[in-house]
Image (cartoon, rainbow, N blue to C red; front, side):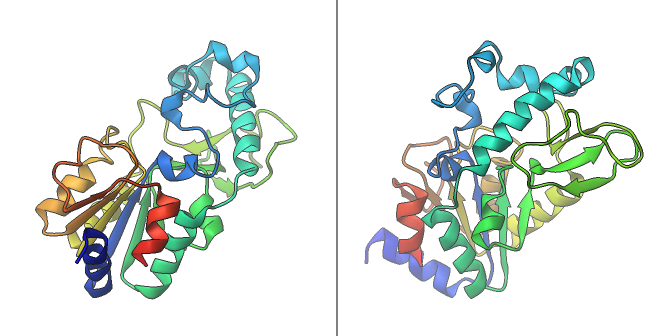
Length: 245
């Protein structure tokens, strides 16, 4: 029996499955990763070459110039809107349909899992299509690739911010608690397209392993957790995940 066949058997017999996805699965749909500084996209306007995401995706940057930060996010939204879910996203949605006790934890803010049909998605870094009021905290979903007014405003009159987790901010506590519970309860834990460098999300791999899960990594490159998983598949998500089904 090959390692891939064993992984399929683990998934088939598991009573509970949890998945952690990172930027790699979205990169396969043409969305540049955050770690690439968004600088390798041919569509990147020259203006943004002067800035790192770490300089713009912060509460301090937003406080200094909310319109400028929103212009950057508006460009990102327009780029993401052109992308489509790939075979990896679709395979995870199918896995959820087959396994009722299934949790998808994602570090991605692009919404491609939702568009692929996944319904139980824990977005630990937020959602770029969510707008949150800076005064009353009201949240709303706005799927338009480009917003007509920057910065956008809430019905209460205050400006809104992107509903994402910025550098220096804590993860949403309720969502993070659910992610930890899913990792602890998983019989199989899939780690897909993540560098395993961003904490605390990468810590879920250690938590799942310590709780007795079979951990399967799908990534073309070796990562810091490759040495501790039960099976590391050196392949793209769009190639490997359909085979795991």
